[in-house]
Image (cartoon, each protein chain N blue to C red):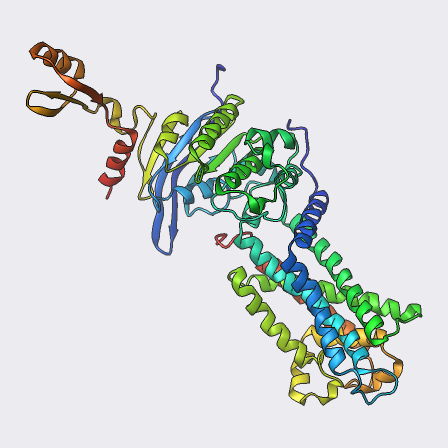
Length: 270
Length: 283
């Protein structure tokens, strides 16, 4: 019996991922809030401001379609991880897992599987709304898709890691919605997700937003899905890919460090 | 059964744990032999759950020596956890999975799990195997907790108030399951508020109050039960009478010799009475 070895973290992580995905898609509230809400917001905002743009190359609705991908990722990565871990801590999931040979790594792999699957679904949904409702055109050159890939990857890693860290601030799952959503929604406004052009925001707002990842995520996605001429409407007059990579990369490092130092299996874990 | 007794499953010496200056566990000694069913009794706040959670590796201790299956729970790793089964209190997770999915998931954590269908059957949930966990009653949910606790074939099973919410029939079935697991060699540490449960299941038990063991023994001897006076009650011409005696047989012989007696009964203090005396005496 002792010769039988324990299952690896990789295998357990995939098992966690399968179970977590099943639980996510069976929970109507989770699907509705995480996945559908950003798309609904895009439909509404896009429809309201459809014809208000001054730029001939792209409508405001198309700008929102690109920017809103940042909000979608914040929703499926940061918010759902933050509330998910708080819920797991509260409902006994983490305590139960802690009593088995489950590893913390396997638990996080499971969470990451959910984030990756739901984020891809979210991005696909938002792009579908942008293309079908607001005539956004998907890029046909590989360079833009490469930009898309690295902006997406950095956005997901930073948002997920910060979500894990934020879960430590959430005392219980009931308050999670407020604790996580209030700063997120505020940051969306500051970062110009719901406003176009971003230069119409007060200067202090943009200054504050520039310290956080959301502004750079949205700017990155605009650079992928909007015509090159719209770069002039960014604050710096260009897409600033180098700075986007730098800021998002820094947040990935900060997020991972916070997540390693703040994660606790249970509230009683002293 | 063997010539040299196996090392104890649990060995605690001088366990201490304080929360904000208040000692929840104040120098507790306890030994649970391998293969034993041991019940830990005590009022809420006596230090039961703290003690058990230190043994399970959930909480850190402030002092004392602890060995569970030969290892220190504060530092033991995954291999050690694979040898334990834990049924903790009040989990309300897994709601969106079915019973079978939940048990199967936890089976994947262990090197040599029991077959999932067999475990579901053992806890009497076969009829609910495909039901979502959130639709289960409180007692059924508790049985799922037990199923998850035993799916890894634990050598040592912790049951923290396992039968809360069970109807009498489910409790009987649960007792049979505990006897079956114990017959297979599983050591079981049980905390419960049901003294009949402790009396029926436990080989030995301890009463904990104020963070200390105040009595320890078998269900028949704990707190000096076997030496306590019996109460003899009967009805005679003057009405209902009771008398306490160390030798009820002699009293009854004397009574029947003196004349007709009706409604004769002899009672020893129940485990519950002994228990209440034990925890009351400590305050």
